[in-house]
Length: 355
Image 1 (cartoon, helix red, strand yellow):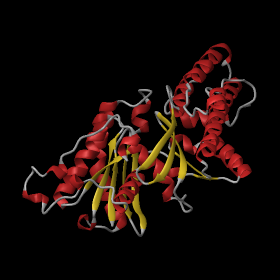
Image 2: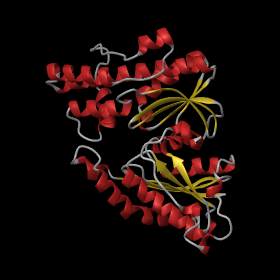
Image 3: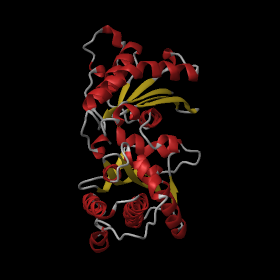
Image 4: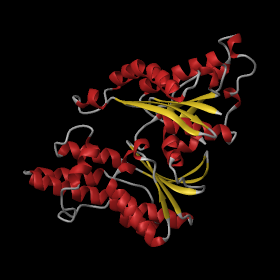
């Protein structure tokens, strides 16, 4: 079964072709980073317009790379949410229109489900069940994953997510946009033991087992510290290193506690912050000491991409997790009233509701 994946939830246009037996055939990604840099963040209207310009040429490029024809596609998976409403509408409308034309199913995929399943694209994928640490943009969550579509929320951020804290702290240190990767690079030059920053909600976890996250207080602590001491490059590097270590300490401790609570031995780490090398180093070390295994997506699939959406669509189809409205009866060309191709987007969408 051949699945076309379309991802347009924010500031990256991702397209991919995934075959249920042959794996990932081709993928392409366009990032809008340079366009949004001068504004210090994503401008939703500009993001939507750029998706319109990019999505069809990228589809043609991926089809050409894979040596496939449109008639070969069995289904189209697209990001339905969460994300920017205008950006989501671009991918959703293109996917639905193309599916209508070809008479094939169009599957709305939860963006975080794509990230959660992305390590299955790796050469050594995990097996179900596992605990997943999702650290993507505005989301930091721990999930128990029993199977495709079977997700139990164990803990989530109550304010700033880890990715947001990285970006906002980078701005405080004058690193520009996007700040997360730049802060991680600066942290590699600093002394992480110089400043003792808070580890939010770790004491509460030890008392009650609570697995929620909170990083707004840590961000405020860095703000006060930066105003007081960030006067030279070496000090800024030390602040960055100390901040990163605080984030990593929390993520590692809560991930290990989630494994203990569930009795599972496999941890999946996905999302943009999952590319952080210090986080990977600490998790690998802690897991090895406990006899656990940690799985990550390839670096190219840590950020938003079409491959993870195509994969999620293929897995959902394979598991029979497709609603009746997604199975066109007869030819869809018989009339526009066919409900299989009505669509909407979900800028806010609980992953547990997507099961």
